[in-house]
Image (cartoon, rainbow, N blue to C red; front, side, top):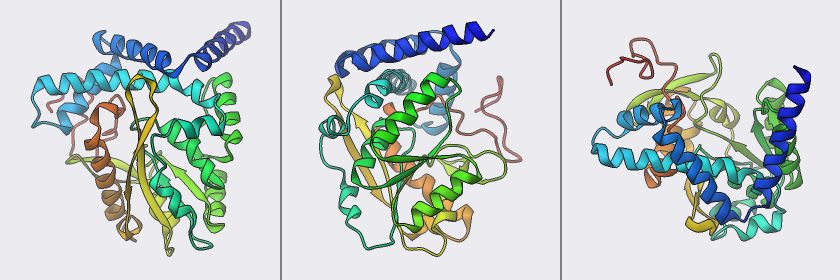
Length: 303
């Protein structure tokens, strides 16, 4: 068993090194093919994508949902194959991939002690957005370790190389984020990741309750920090990435965590509607369901 895992890790490492060397245009073409296969084959990801699009866009016709679903899984394939390339890139190379400077960069020239929260949903290239952000100042990012040691090592080394400090998704990681906040640094968060346990609130997302993390309003309590929700749109033919940003107001720091979660989801929804074909619809965003709501992912459940 140990030898089998060692062989698996070596094969994964070899694949990562190969993807890291491919030109981004070729890299994205390969990822698109992989994603298309996932869409056309009877996969779990394709099934969940169809369910989510039917829930979130009931007003759209089936042809539109099929087109967006296929393109979404192709985008997720590109997110998979581009990651080693981005992890292997130097900060200067990452900067050249930005079609324009991010708007949040001007907030880095902020008053002493004011932190900048960058909230990047599973939309576009969140890996690029996170790696690139560390160029603009000291940064701490919430991080869930990968199960495969080879991949985990690559991610840790890549983020450390651009200046980011990783905060594990546990109590020690929360302390790391609090310390970065108190120093007025940049803090990276994935706002649409379902929290574990009872650390979240169900709030509307595309008109349906979704369990939403309350980490952001907890960290903002009693403070006047900057909050920007953004994503890096993946441009065609490997031409780089274009930023889309929403500057949040005090609504995301509401002392009522349910209202804060609803405000966060409203901003995420605004960004997703700009580019629905690059959102990760293969994620069970509406699980677990609150009491009284059926599980939409259970076979036979009416939508």
